[in-house]
Structure formats: structure tokens, C-alpha cells
Length: 418
Image 1 (cartoon, helix red, strand yellow):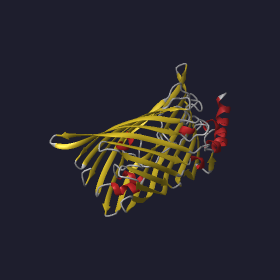
Image 2 (cartoon, one colour):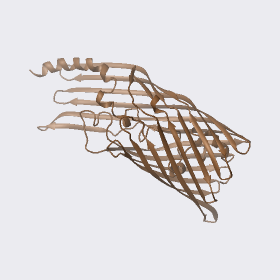
Image 3 (tube, rainbow, N blue to C red):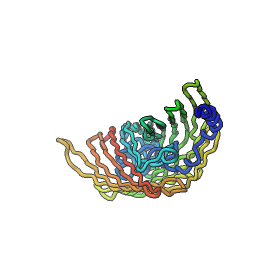
Image 4 (cartoon, helix red, strand yellow):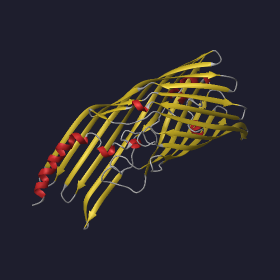
């Protein structure tokens, strides 16, 4: 007798809450670090990063190891040999605490979750002709993956409630860049960037005894177009300066949503479908760096980057979502020592790298930041190069001591010895 009123009230409750469910619940608005659209590990994503740059703390716009600089500072393309090609693979692992329905609603955890991915992250090619250079690079820029959740509550040997959560997605970037050298000291470059990707999320709640299931399925397909540009100036024989900028742009998505309520026994099946054109206003990024070489073996690089997150805007299924973000400045620096030796009968060089990185996150309600230590090894053998780099970081400010790690391997080919 008690189930009949519930079967009547529950569908009406679902229908009345469908509009509210199209945006995060109020308890989720303080997520900050891991909103559903947040990139895994850090919000501060700026182009592709090679293993060599990773070993110096994340240097990406003041020194050119390969053509992937087209996506950060295309002016550096003129410093590469006549032609080059490179591939980078990476393994990334990250800790999360508060995300989606975890520690924001019915599901809580006493410890952090972890998730990661292994991927061929980027590939690039460049060609230089006289004072001009052109390049193309493609790579994985952001991951929206979250730990899979499958939890249930049982009483008297029966499952009373179960929750399943799955979120996956990636954003890929494609850059076509052109650079020109003016005299012996100055270079300028600009790039056209296309981003495309997807984000898919499924949240299912079940009450098996009552035969009730509520499923919330959402899918987005992203696209965006923007410009980037850079300058490189040789101040002296061993010192150079760089400046790079990424224009703000809107990452738009065609979005679909299906909220479904089913109840066995009464043949109840309520489906609420929606479509929208979502948008995510991406910030202006401006960076500057120095590259110093004080001997044949020793060198160092340092850079900072400004991310204008205070202008970040999200429109999700026709609703503006509050994102109390602040502008942040990231910093990275590293030193490299290049050993000379032989590999078989051939001369070779073995770069050794060490670096630091400071990566503040944009949330204003909890000033969270990562401090990371980086390391790397390399091999230069004629026209071939291989680099292995890693970075481990720990977050402070949120109270959850999140950790992140990244290991990358780059293999490059050049038309001339480097």
C-alpha cells in the first residue's frame, strides 16, 4: 500500500526537477578544481609540452626542442633545422577528491580517488625555407576523464540503492603556424588553432527493491578556433627572450541531454530530452621567458604565463553557470647539463635536466596551487633525439593534498645534427 503513492509522487518529482538538474546542484558549485568541464590535473593548459620541456619544469615558450612550439610560441620555429618531426607519448595520473556526485551529494569518501591515461599525446612537423618556417602540430590538450564509480548500499541481504558514474572526454588541438626571421636577432610567428573534442557523462541511480531507475546522460561535442603568436629576440650570444600570446576564444559544443525515469511493474518510462549550444569562454594567455646558455654544457630557462580566468564564462543548456575564478600567473624554471660521450663508435650528448614549477589554480573560494619537481634525461645522436621527462606535484590550499604526476617520452628527427 505504501508503494503506490511513491510511484505517483516520484515521476512528478522528477519532472518538476528536470530543469534544476540541467545545471549542477548548489552543493556542487564550490567544486572549483573539478567542475565537470575542468581539465584533468590543471586548468592552466597552454599548447603542447614536450618531454624535454617537461624535464625543465614545463618550459614551453622560450626554447624550441621540436615543432610542437607552433602551439605555444611559433616564433621559435626559425631556430629549428631545415626540417624536423617529433612524436610525444605521455602517462598522466591525478588525484581527485570532490567531483561530480562524489563528496558533493549522497556519495562521500574519506580519501582521494585517482585516475589517469596513457596516450600518444602529440605529433609535429616543421620545414624552414630561408628566413621563413612553417609547421603543423596535433595533440591531446585536455582530458575530462573522472574515476569510474560503482557503489551500492545493502540491508538484510538486499541492495537498496546503487549509484554508477562514468565521465570520459578529450580535447584535441591542431595548429598550423608560420614564422619569419628578421635579421639575426628577431623572429615573429603566428598560428591558427582548431580544437575539437567530446565530453560524455552518465549518472545512474537505482532502487532495485522498488524497481526504480533514474539515469542522467549528457554528451557534448566541442569545437573552437583561435590565434596564437610569439616573438623571439636574441639579446646576446648566450641570452634570448620570448613573448607569446593566445587570444581568448569561445569553445562551443553541441550538447544533448536525456533524463530518464523507469519503474518496473507499472510500465513507467518518463524521458526528458534536451538539446543546446553550450559555450565556454576561454581566457587570454600571455607568457614571457628567458633562455640562457653560459657554456657549451650548461644552460637554463625560465618563464611565466598569465591566464585571465576572471573572464571565464560558461553557458550550459541555456543557463549561465557561476564560476568565481581569479586571474593566475604560473611559473617554471629549470637547468640543463649536457654530457658528452659516445654511443658505440658515434659521438653523442646526454642532457640531464632538473626543474621546478608553480601552478596556481583559478578558483577564488579556495586558493589552491601545485608545486612540482621535474627531472629529465635525453640523448642526442646525430640527427636523432630522444627525451624522457617527468614531473610530480602536490597541491595545497584545498585541504585535500591532491597529487599529480606526468611522464613523457619524445622521439624526434632532424635534417641536420643538433
